[in-house]
Length: 160
Image (tube, rainbow, N blue to C red; front, side):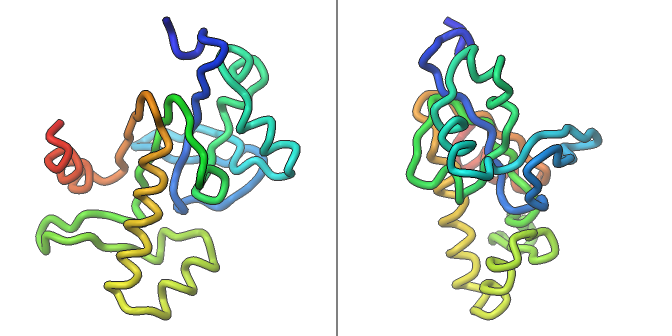
């Protein structure tokens, strides 16, 4: 059965902190193309509708087209998740270690926090953020990487 046709299937798009948060029509560049999605459901009513939307209803209502971040998905589980792995947290293949890039972080609070702690602590925080984002799916997870070295590293670790 198609995940979108199953009336109980909850499918979501999620992404890290690489884009400015705007409630309507944020343009996200994926590869060479842009797509426009609403970002982070704003009001409590909007969030509840986004959380609960499922199946064909989520497509018909447009809820499937909203992108959530850690603040909207933390502690929740969804059936299927499409995750865009940004450029804020990348694998450096030359150094064989994770790196974070403050230039890509659009969340000012997080950017300020990471700039005032050790690099090791900042990397641990970023690992935790990505771990949370990557574990929201209970049935299927689709990954799209904006950085090829990160994609290759994650694929090697996951053996896919």
